[in-house]
Length: 499
Image (cartoon, rainbow, N blue to C red):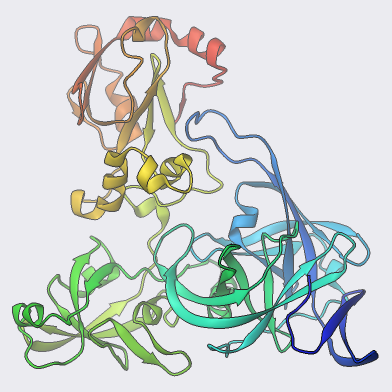
């Protein structure tokens, strides 16, 4: 792959860990600038879980990527690379020497992970990369990849936008660089470092080869992650905890008690139990400032580096868990200040977990009926278009979970499918149902269900569902008799996994 630089053809030579760039112009070769680019290959093998058949794993996979060597013997990669890993290995590009590594810290929401080799001497001779925290629109950065031979491939790109966007697991929004870049596929493309002036500017987040647009995890997000990663307990990025509307509509401003054409956004939804709710933020408030930054009618503030940017950046990237952030609001026209102690909401604190990497899914099989706790990981089994292709009732529950279940501290139990056995004759077409009660007991988790089926009514387990058929009676003795058949016919080692 060649860089697109006018009147220059770049030739890349890898010498150990040092990539020296030479420029050839008018048949004359001379050194332009030596770069100490500390990169390692990262080889990962693992197995993901099959949420349609939760008792088994998927076929083994192998991935290859590049890791950026940082200080203190750490190697930075994306979290996607190490999800569901069984074994991680570092490889010196110039020599092929290999060393097993462990995942020290991983953040799936920010899509970042830190690795450490079993022996830190393995990184000797590799100068740690510093971070370039000053990248702005119009800057040029270089994407780094390796050929099979170990030769360095550098592709030049232009930063066209700096904005706040959703990351792959779709939990919150984070600062993102958008680049125009003609990136080619390499077997290490799972993690592609981006450098500016020999410093790490970001990592590949996603790439669209048709439009040649890349979204990148920027250095400020990486810096936030690294600062938290040295703590005994990694805190994660703060959770915003509320949604808002712009206030350009004069009628909305009048409804909220606002006069004039001042700034601020209309708070329209608050997650129960969130930090902002604890601080007293209410629906209908007009948020006018976060800390020392005023918020305009569209929800933007003027960032000292990036200029106009979404206010979310103030609460996720610039703030840390435990920080007190003052929010200035108007409540029916009256100015107030709320001090929010920022918190991170872990995935197990959601009603419907947004992600569950590296964890085996829970399930309970009763006489061929497969019960699971609804999660976004389960919905993602329908592929990239799961929002359209997955059962729409489940998508609705996921999207509006806080409005539908404001009490929190529960799960949504579903009857995902029915395996044909003697006790389920006639029920084979049932599936994708929301379970409300079993044997008269309200079901808020698989543990509730496991307890309820211990008490059949008149020899039957009565399964009540939100959707038709509303009630499924299951012969309890027959369900027990079908257990050996289920194990043998469907290769199920155990009929339940509750932890």
